[in-house]
Image 1 (cartoon, rainbow, N blue to C red):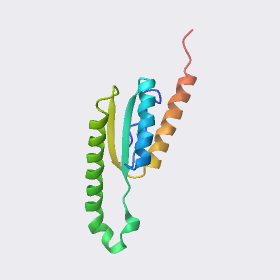
Image 2: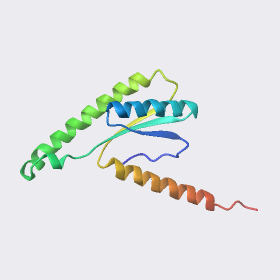
Image 3: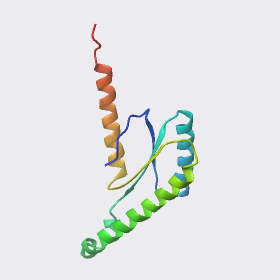
Length: 124
């Protein structure tokens, strides 16, 4: 599960390790430095059942997922080393499942936190 953080506390950066996501990371780094925030780098491994036939999914799936998670963790550590010289706190997460569902869950959680803050009545 994506670690949901306050919007003003961290810049959330989804990564797929493509050149485009690295460009996005550079923009996010600029935002984090400008607003004195931390970065939360995350990548989700989606179980690739579409690529495997029904008879092989149960046998090959776990090895493939583990391999993808290890690759993602290595890439995250490389990025962390590269970004370590910048003056920004960096957190990393490699998860399993749908990144879209995790992001939506965080958005819903943030909306409900914002709503509860707005509804809080200060004592008179």
